[in-house]
Length: 467
Ligand SMILES: C=C(O[C@H]1C=CC=C(C(=O)O)[C@@H]1O)C(=O)O
Ligand SMILES: [Mg+2]
Image (cartoon, rainbow, N blue to C red; front, top):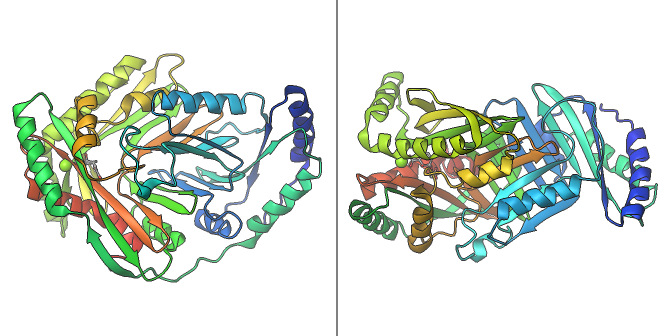
C-alpha cells in the first residue's frame, strides 16, 4: 500500500493559480515523493484505462533507471525542420521557467521531465505510417514513476491556469490513488502472427548494390540503408506483453515505448546516443555486427572474427571518427579505450567503443544530440551527403526509427538512445525496422541477412517467432 500526502501539491496549486494570474500564462506544479517500489510494468499497465495512448516506458541498459509516464500534462511538438533541437530546448526551458517544484531529492530523472524524440530526417516526405508522430514530439506526463538505483519516486505534474480552482488538488489526489493502489493485472493473452510481409526485399538489395557502386566511385564512404517488415496479428497487440518480453530477453538494452494518438513506438535498443549528468557526457560507437554462436566456443569465434574483420572494422571506425570529432568540439576532455570491444545481446553482437567526455560549460544535452544525430551508425559518412542519399534512395519512411529517443529533466540532465531494434504498433498491425551500414566491401545478400537478424528481437517480442 502506498500512502501519499497531498499537502505540498495543494499549496503548490494555490500558488500556481495566483502566479498564473500575475504572469498571464499557465504554470506547472511538480511534486516528487519517495514511494514504495511498484513493478514498473504494472504501473504502465495501470494506465491502460485512463491513459491509453498517453503513456511512455523507459529502462536503461544498467537496469538501474526505469521511468514510466502516464497522461500528458503538456506536449511539445513541431514539424519544423530547421533548428528543431534548439526549438524543443527553448520551449522546454520556457515551460519550466516559472514552475513551482517540490523536490527534496538530488537525483536525475524526477520532477519535471519531458520524454520523447525526433524523427530521423525531417526533410524526408512523411507517409501515413508516421502520421501520429510529429517530427519533434515530447510529452510531459501527469504522473511519472521513476525507479533509480532501487529507490522509487512518484512525480505528479499539474498545469494550472488562472481559471483553475483549489479543488484541483483533491481531484488529482483521487486520480493518482486509483492507479497507484490498483496493482494492475497484466493481460496474458498472447499476440499471434497471421501475416508477415517483408517490404520489397529484392529492390532493397538492388539499392544496396547500387550504393556500393557509388561508394567505390565517389566521395561517400558509408550509407546506412534500412527496410521494413509489416506484420499482422490475430488481435490488437498487447503492448504490455511486448514490453514484458523485451524486459526479459533484452536486458542489456534500452527498452522504450512511446504512445502517440493510438500508435505505439517500441523497441529494445543497445545503442546509447548520449547521456548527460552535469558536465559529464557518455556516448557510444556501435557498428559492425555478427550473429551469436549456438555454443560458447562458436560465440567466441564469431566475436573474434568480427573484431578482426576489415569490412566491419571500417564500418565501426567511421562511427568512432565522427563521434570523436563531434565530442572534441564541445568537450574539454574526451576519453576512448584504445581497443574496440564487443557488445553482446541475445540475437546479435556488435563492435563497441564507449566514449566519455567532460563538456565545456553551457553545452546542453540537446545541442549534443543535434551534433551527433545521425552518427554513421544510422546515417553515414560524410553525414549530410549520406542523409541526402538515404532520402533519395530509401523506400522506407523511417519516422522515429534510427533517431534520438529519451528524456531530459528540468536540470537538463538526461539520456537519449538511438531507436533501433524497434517497431511501430498500430492496433493489430506493426511495422518493424532494421538497417545496416553499407560500405565499399558490402555484399547485398550479407547485409540482407544482417537485417534479418536485427528484426529478431522485435519479431520475437511481438510473438512472431516462437522460441
Ligand atoms: C541500423 C541498425 O544498426 C546499426 C547499429 C549497430 C550495427 C549496425 C551495423 O553493423 O550495420 C548498424 O549501424 C539497426 O539495427 O537497424
Ligand atoms: Mg553492419
